[in-house]
Image (cartoon, rainbow, N blue to C red; front, side, top):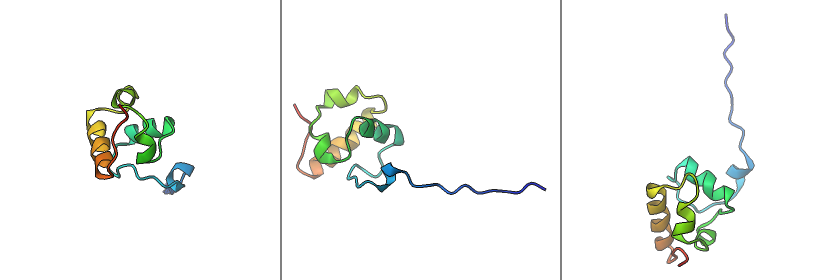
Length: 79
C-alpha cells in the first residue's frame, strides 16, 4: 500500500508582503511586476504603459486590470 502524503504549501516571503495589486491578476503578470520591483499601485504608477507591456507576463488583460485599479485610486500610468 502506498502512503499518501499531502504537501502543505509553505507561505513564501512574497505571500507575506502587503500588496494592493488586483487580486485577480494572473500569476505571470504578478511575477513580472514583482520581478520589476512593483508591489503596490503607487509603485506601478511610476511606469508607463509602454514599459509595462514589455514585461513578459503582462498582456492586454493584465494591462486592463492594472489600469482600472490605478484609476480607482485616482492614479494612472506615467506618460
